[in-house]
Length: 89
Image 1 (cartoon, one colour):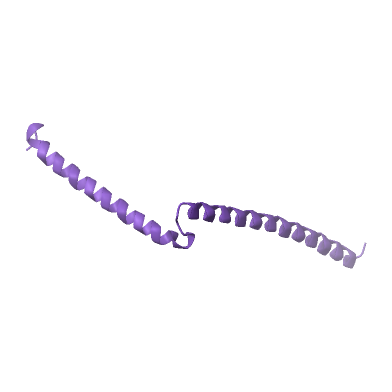
Image 2: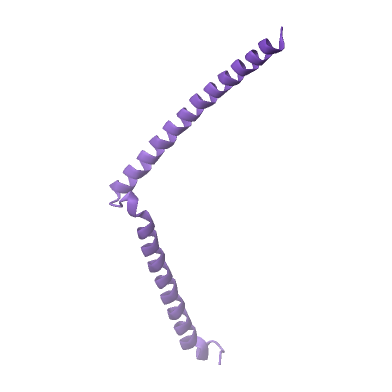
């Protein structure tokens, strides 16, 4: 077999591998799109617009932070109130 024949064979094999890779990637893309559609539908079923997820997360983090701060203040106040009865200063 000549060098040119060998090159042709290598190129044909590479093309076959690339076609197989493309098909595999198409399958992965289709699966990812299906998963995305499912997640978006789940969000909508909970009255959450998928395009506004970031805004909603920021709101939830703000509420969470506020609740933690409130719990900390309440716990500190309770600790101060109980201090005279549990041997504190």
